[in-house]
Image 1 (spheres, rainbow, N blue to C red):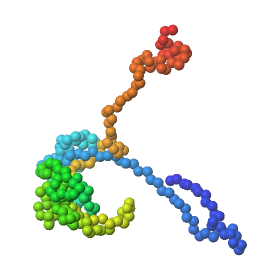
Image 2: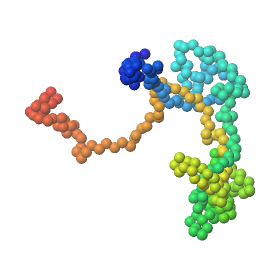
Image 3: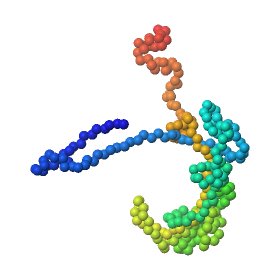
Length: 292
């Protein structure tokens, strides 16, 4: 505990009236108290690949010893833990506890299919504008096109194009989606990319800190989320290694260093003479190194 003493002026709390001159009139005093706290980051963790429990007869002590990079029993030598003698924790197969990982599940059990996402946004007409002065929004003309592969490994033609244009009321366009979608423009259902429907004759009011209140074209967007899949879900155990305690970021190795030693080659004789300033230094250097 630290005791901090402060002096405050009582002048503003003291009466200056004739009948009670010099008396304290305040009933309470307000003091600012500053609280500080020191926190220490435990550092980054190491992700260890999760090994599926596919053999119910396996002895945990053997399992931990054979696990990749696992030397748990060696580290815990001399300590008494239940799992070392074969005791296992009973975890329900269909556990609903969110903080408990079921040992019988694999990574795929945590995948969740995505679904349609709709909303209102700003228009992206500048993305689908062509170089034509007379017809800048040309239907089914690829502004950009590439052959991509989705997260399931299925190839598709990634495109940016206008799908329909009724004098901009409305205009529909697809950005980074499959060139075959949507098959029915009246049902803007897409599996890839974002589908926009912009109506320039309708506006909606938005408020932003940068521009304040403004009116923008009414634009709907349709998108199909990919959900949780193999590209964004990993099943790893986060462990702490002793030498990484307090290390909050991955070390960076700079392997392209260049050392400029000047125009003169650094030889031993040059370095020695660089430490000699006068005759006394020359005589005493290295306890008689030079034979004078």
